[in-house]
Amino acid sequence: MKVLVVRHAIALDRAEAERIGMPDSERPLTREGRARMKAVARGLVQRVPDVSVIFTSPWLRATETAELLRRRYSDIGWVQSEALLPGTEPAALASALSAHGYEGALAVVGHEPHLSGWVSWCLTGDTRPVLELRKGGACLLRFPTDVVAAAQAQLLWLMTPGLARR
Image 1 (cartoon, one colour):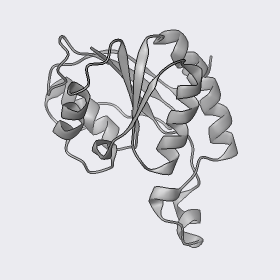
Image 2: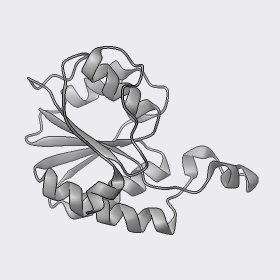
Image 3: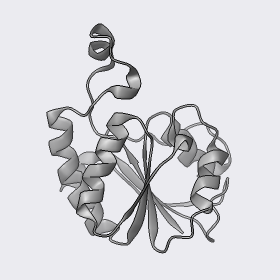
Image 4: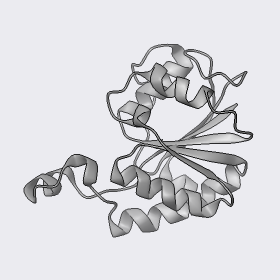
């Protein structure tokens, strides 16, 4: 099984959201974030053309990012999962992904530092980050079976958003 891991694109600044009384979960993508993510999505589809479903955090900036990615794929499933919320245990996301018998690769869209901790757990069994995903950045993991588990993944590549846009 392959899992494409994508950090949400550039969103409204946290301090600005707090200033206007907006909850963190409702921060939208900026115009620049949308434009850059559209280009990132084109690059990701070329590199991982067989994504069959996108799992996304229910927070607005992640769902907006996932929607931009989903538009680049045709006939693709969509699942909002609280297992992608910051602070959730890695095993919760692993279980959610393993429970779906989709063909092709799966994609997940979420937040830092949760995603880098989850990826590290998949690679090493420890949530101490061994990498960091930039906003709009991505990596591709491969698991030897259809079960997502600690210390079972192989990192196939890690891509900055700038590289993905090229």
